[in-house]
Amino acid sequence: MKKRLWILLFCLTPVLAIFLNTGCSETPAAPAPTPTYTPTLTCSGASGQFGLTTTDGVNSTQSSTNMATQFTMASNGAVTAIAAGICGSSGPTTAYFGIYSDASGGPGTLMGPAASQVISSCPGGPFSPVTVTLSTPLVLYAGTYWVAVGSPGELFYSVTASTGTNVQPTNPGAGALPSTYPSANFSYCCQPQLYGFWACP
Image 1 (spheres, helix red, strand yellow):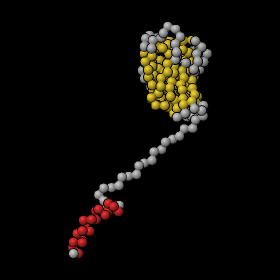
Image 2 (cartoon, one colour):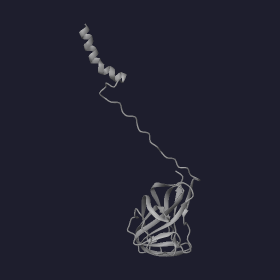
Image 3 (cartoon, helix red, strand yellow):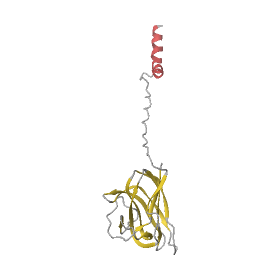
Image 4 (cartoon, one colour):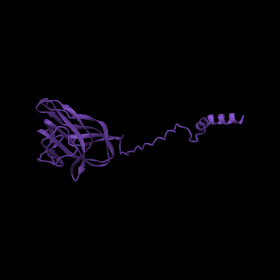
């Protein structure tokens, strides 16, 4: 009788260990999930714009050029789209749009992925700005940044002739915007109509 009782206890031990969670089970317990930290962004206002949104009617043609203009975010926000007064002066061409950090008063490192769009030929008269939506909104904290546009082709820019400060032109533009913006290598008279939209996420 005692022998049968010991055999029964021996057979039931693994089962009892599972129910009692004594650690004798061959199947380890699943680890607790790691908590995910999601930062919050405090904004002043629901949305806004930055950069030069107007033009004085002056136009300028530039071939294979990147243009960057400085702007200030007065509040935290997430950039959702970038716009530029441009058209293809020699036919359709691809333009690239992006935001750069500020590096001692000049554009520094490309922040987030750049956006691209095929730009139509110039209509032969007034033309409206082209707006591209970023695939992922780019969160920026209040501060100074640079908004840039570039193309390996020839673009016709709508500009303001009287505000040519804080513009960094580079030539030639090598297609997609570079991860680090090169130093300006020629002077430019004007400031292109180049701006963006932000929202509080």
